Image (cartoon, rainbow, N blue to C red):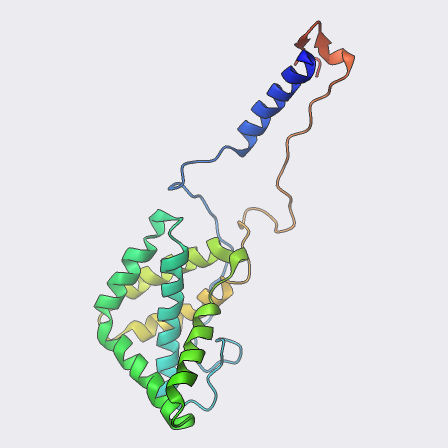
Length: 215
């Protein structure tokens, strides 16, 4: 039993070395390439749900509101990564681009009033709820949070009234970041290495001591 206990202690030490990680604030991640071409907001498959029969001002409003929705999701789900500043940047964007965000919301209201009629509010609520949910992907959290951090910094660098330019230039990146999770330095199919199990045959023992040189 003493032999088995010593072997288990050695195994625990090896596993402890293998799974030790930096402090939570020190996340090192080399993301895959998620950049894409600028968009207008009318591209098929870009948004879930899709806006059908939107007029140009409504399409632009939907584009800006999707940007806001994605960064709102990031503020809620990326707090495990403090250096991304997801909450601080999101709140700053709400303040800095308040007028443009309000105009985008009014644009969405106009679209649903025009296309739905009296039930516009309930339909719009369902639409925006699905919009928010489309940015929640468990398997791509780090990729999404990295893209959101870059997008938020871009948005804060824009003068008031130009948030739509960030949306045009970054929304393809935000959508692409929802596809994959793995670090770009590691193939997606590569398994995480696991330390080999210790040998327990007689060759590995000297009396009751485990002989690490032999095994």
